[in-house]
Image (cartoon, rainbow, N blue to C red; front, side, top):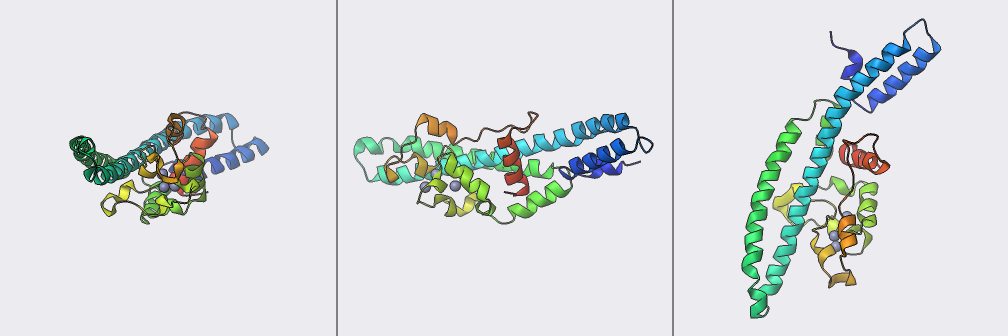
Length: 231
Ligand SMILES: [Zn+2]
Ligand SMILES: [Zn+2]
Ligand SMILES: [Zn+2]
């Protein structure tokens, strides 16, 4: 028989279990708290581990898609610039073009991984919520936490350029989002007098791991923003 509690997805599951724990604590006749505690461990291990591994993979894949899109944008900008430049500048063009072709293949490969991950998400509120949020291509602008996170990490949301609000390529919708270490604008030393140092490059890569328990505060915020779209 299906266990009704097991069907409830987190974080609702945690709330229900807290409630059961309180009731169990108040009424020793109703249920044995040791049994609840044991079952809680099983529920946690099965549902939560699958979900957090899934969430980690899909957020990382989204991040890689953004990196590729932003790197492409960076290269296109420089191809345009170098094309009209000196002979030595033009000599760099074949390398840039070769990299663009490789990035195009990589984008297609990651897009497939993304679709497979999405199809593999356990059915429930998380999947429907995630898909509903992503229907809006610029969903990431609605989250004040994501905007502030971009700014805190040294991304364009902390400056006047508004790059995150004007996505680079209509063919790269899955690559739209806040700055990664590959953002053309963040990498452009000439604009805004902003120089991307090694430290900033590291900062631009969000440091989170949903497969490590307990979650850090940052991991929890990442999960809320990317999966639930909550601030
Ligand atoms: Zn910018
Ligand atoms: Zn940027
Ligand atoms: Zn941003």
